[in-house]
Image 1 (cartoon, rainbow, N blue to C red):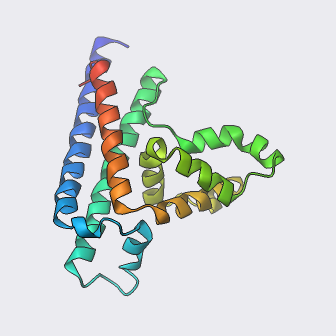
Image 2: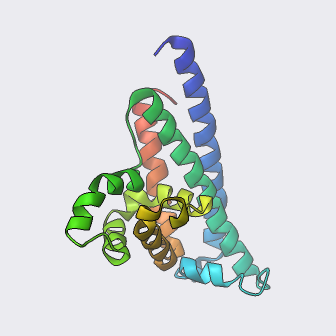
Length: 188
Protein backbone atom coordinates (compact mmCIF):
# COMPACT_ATOMS: atom_id res chain seq x y z
CA UNK A 1 0.00 0.00 0.00
CA UNK A 2 1.45 3.36 -0.95
CA UNK A 3 2.19 5.92 1.74
CA UNK A 4 -0.61 8.36 0.82
CA UNK A 5 -3.24 5.62 0.75
CA UNK A 6 -2.04 4.29 4.11
CA UNK A 7 -2.34 7.80 5.62
CA UNK A 8 -5.91 8.05 4.35
CA UNK A 9 -6.77 4.63 5.77
CA UNK A 10 -5.13 5.51 9.07
CA UNK A 11 -7.05 8.81 9.28
CA UNK A 12 -10.39 7.10 8.60
CA UNK A 13 -9.65 4.33 11.09
CA UNK A 14 -8.64 6.86 13.74
CA UNK A 15 -11.89 8.74 13.22
CA UNK A 16 -13.96 5.57 13.40
CA UNK A 17 -12.19 4.39 16.55
CA UNK A 18 -12.54 7.81 18.18
CA UNK A 19 -16.30 7.79 17.53
CA UNK A 20 -16.67 4.17 18.68
CA UNK A 21 -14.88 4.98 21.94
CA UNK A 22 -16.98 8.13 22.40
CA UNK A 23 -20.22 6.14 22.08
CA UNK A 24 -18.85 3.53 24.45
CA UNK A 25 -17.96 6.20 27.03
CA UNK A 26 -21.48 7.61 26.79
CA UNK A 27 -22.87 4.10 27.34
CA UNK A 28 -20.56 3.69 30.31
CA UNK A 29 -21.99 6.83 31.98
CA UNK A 30 -25.48 5.40 31.65
CA UNK A 31 -24.28 2.00 32.88
CA UNK A 32 -22.99 3.60 36.07
CA UNK A 33 -26.19 5.61 36.53
CA UNK A 34 -28.49 2.60 36.10
CA UNK A 35 -26.31 -0.22 37.46
CA UNK A 36 -29.25 -1.81 39.29
CA UNK A 37 -31.00 -2.45 35.94
CA UNK A 38 -28.15 -4.07 34.00
CA UNK A 39 -29.65 -7.56 34.30
CA UNK A 40 -32.45 -6.48 31.97
CA UNK A 41 -32.31 -8.42 28.75
CA UNK A 42 -32.33 -6.88 25.31
CA UNK A 43 -35.88 -8.15 24.86
CA UNK A 44 -36.87 -6.06 27.90
CA UNK A 45 -35.47 -2.96 26.20
CA UNK A 46 -37.52 -3.77 23.10
CA UNK A 47 -40.61 -4.25 25.27
CA UNK A 48 -40.18 -0.78 26.77
CA UNK A 49 -41.41 0.59 23.43
CA UNK A 50 -44.54 -1.56 23.08
CA UNK A 51 -46.81 1.38 23.88
CA UNK A 52 -44.74 4.18 22.40
CA UNK A 53 -41.90 6.06 24.07
CA UNK A 54 -41.15 4.63 27.54
CA UNK A 55 -42.37 6.79 30.41
CA UNK A 56 -39.71 5.80 32.94
CA UNK A 57 -36.38 7.63 32.81
CA UNK A 58 -34.40 4.44 33.44
CA UNK A 59 -36.12 2.76 30.49
CA UNK A 60 -35.32 5.62 28.13
CA UNK A 61 -31.72 5.75 29.30
CA UNK A 62 -31.20 1.98 29.10
CA UNK A 63 -32.47 2.13 25.52
CA UNK A 64 -30.03 4.96 24.89
CA UNK A 65 -27.21 2.92 26.47
CA UNK A 66 -27.92 0.11 24.00
CA UNK A 67 -28.15 2.62 21.12
CA UNK A 68 -24.69 3.91 22.03
CA UNK A 69 -23.29 0.37 22.07
CA UNK A 70 -24.94 -0.34 18.71
CA UNK A 71 -23.37 2.82 17.29
CA UNK A 72 -19.96 1.76 18.57
CA UNK A 73 -20.47 -1.68 17.00
CA UNK A 74 -21.18 -0.11 13.61
CA UNK A 75 -17.87 1.79 13.75
CA UNK A 76 -15.91 -1.29 14.82
CA UNK A 77 -17.39 -3.30 11.95
CA UNK A 78 -16.49 -0.54 9.50
CA UNK A 79 -12.90 -0.56 10.77
CA UNK A 80 -12.92 -4.32 10.31
CA UNK A 81 -14.22 -3.97 6.75
CA UNK A 82 -11.49 -1.44 5.87
CA UNK A 83 -8.81 -3.79 7.17
CA UNK A 84 -10.25 -6.67 5.18
CA UNK A 85 -10.36 -4.56 1.99
CA UNK A 86 -6.79 -3.32 2.35
CA UNK A 87 -4.99 -6.10 4.18
CA UNK A 88 -7.25 -9.15 3.93
CA UNK A 89 -7.34 -9.39 7.70
CA UNK A 90 -10.14 -9.16 10.23
CA UNK A 91 -10.25 -8.34 13.90
CA UNK A 92 -13.94 -9.00 14.46
CA UNK A 93 -15.25 -12.33 13.24
CA UNK A 94 -18.02 -12.09 10.68
CA UNK A 95 -20.46 -14.78 11.74
CA UNK A 96 -22.37 -14.53 8.43
CA UNK A 97 -19.28 -15.35 6.37
CA UNK A 98 -18.33 -18.19 8.69
CA UNK A 99 -21.79 -19.73 8.64
CA UNK A 100 -22.16 -19.33 4.87
CA UNK A 101 -19.02 -21.46 4.48
CA UNK A 102 -20.43 -24.13 6.82
CA UNK A 103 -24.05 -24.02 5.61
CA UNK A 104 -24.00 -27.03 3.26
CA UNK A 105 -22.30 -29.23 5.85
CA UNK A 106 -24.70 -28.13 8.57
CA UNK A 107 -27.68 -28.69 6.27
CA UNK A 108 -26.45 -32.20 5.46
CA UNK A 109 -26.10 -32.91 9.18
CA UNK A 110 -29.59 -31.53 9.88
CA UNK A 111 -28.12 -28.70 11.95
CA UNK A 112 -29.09 -25.71 9.80
CA UNK A 113 -31.77 -24.79 12.32
CA UNK A 114 -32.19 -21.63 14.41
CA UNK A 115 -31.73 -23.50 17.70
CA UNK A 116 -28.41 -25.06 16.70
CA UNK A 117 -27.13 -21.87 15.06
CA UNK A 118 -28.10 -19.78 18.10
CA UNK A 119 -26.07 -22.09 20.31
CA UNK A 120 -23.08 -21.70 17.97
CA UNK A 121 -23.46 -17.91 18.06
CA UNK A 122 -23.67 -17.93 21.86
CA UNK A 123 -20.53 -20.04 22.06
CA UNK A 124 -18.55 -17.31 20.27
CA UNK A 125 -20.64 -14.29 21.25
CA UNK A 126 -17.70 -12.21 22.43
CA UNK A 127 -16.10 -12.39 18.99
CA UNK A 128 -19.34 -12.03 17.00
CA UNK A 129 -21.21 -9.41 19.03
CA UNK A 130 -20.24 -6.23 17.13
CA UNK A 131 -21.29 -7.85 13.85
CA UNK A 132 -24.49 -9.22 15.40
CA UNK A 133 -25.41 -5.77 16.75
CA UNK A 134 -24.62 -4.10 13.43
CA UNK A 135 -26.76 -6.59 11.53
CA UNK A 136 -29.57 -6.12 14.04
CA UNK A 137 -29.54 -2.39 13.38
CA UNK A 138 -29.40 -2.90 9.62
CA UNK A 139 -32.42 -5.23 9.95
CA UNK A 140 -30.91 -7.88 7.71
CA UNK A 141 -33.73 -10.29 7.44
CA UNK A 142 -34.33 -13.70 6.00
CA UNK A 143 -36.35 -12.27 3.10
CA UNK A 144 -33.13 -10.76 1.77
CA UNK A 145 -31.48 -14.18 1.60
CA UNK A 146 -33.97 -17.03 2.22
CA UNK A 147 -31.35 -19.78 2.73
CA UNK A 148 -29.91 -17.69 5.57
CA UNK A 149 -33.30 -17.40 7.33
CA UNK A 150 -32.38 -19.80 10.13
CA UNK A 151 -29.26 -17.73 10.88
CA UNK A 152 -31.27 -14.49 11.05
CA UNK A 153 -33.72 -16.16 13.46
CA UNK A 154 -30.79 -17.43 15.54
CA UNK A 155 -29.30 -13.93 15.65
CA UNK A 156 -32.60 -12.49 16.89
CA UNK A 157 -32.94 -15.09 19.62
CA UNK A 158 -29.36 -14.53 20.79
CA UNK A 159 -29.76 -10.75 20.91
CA UNK A 160 -33.04 -10.93 22.79
CA UNK A 161 -31.58 -13.06 25.57
CA UNK A 162 -28.43 -11.03 26.18
CA UNK A 163 -28.33 -8.96 29.34
CA UNK A 164 -27.31 -5.32 29.08
CA UNK A 165 -24.23 -5.98 31.20
CA UNK A 166 -23.18 -8.76 28.81
CA UNK A 167 -23.53 -6.53 25.76
CA UNK A 168 -21.55 -3.81 27.53
CA UNK A 169 -18.78 -6.20 28.61
CA UNK A 170 -18.43 -7.84 25.20
CA UNK A 171 -18.34 -4.46 23.47
CA UNK A 172 -15.66 -3.27 25.89
CA UNK A 173 -13.61 -6.34 24.99
CA UNK A 174 -14.15 -5.73 21.26
CA UNK A 175 -12.99 -2.12 21.49
CA UNK A 176 -9.89 -3.18 23.42
CA UNK A 177 -9.10 -5.90 20.84
CA UNK A 178 -9.52 -3.54 17.92
CA UNK A 179 -7.46 -0.81 19.55
CA UNK A 180 -4.67 -3.25 20.46
CA UNK A 181 -4.47 -4.65 16.91
CA UNK A 182 -4.52 -1.20 15.35
CA UNK A 183 -1.73 -0.03 17.65
CA UNK A 184 0.35 -3.07 16.73
CA UNK A 185 -0.14 -2.26 13.05
CA UNK A 186 0.75 1.37 13.71
CA UNK A 187 -2.57 2.54 12.26
CA UNK A 188 -3.37 4.59 15.34
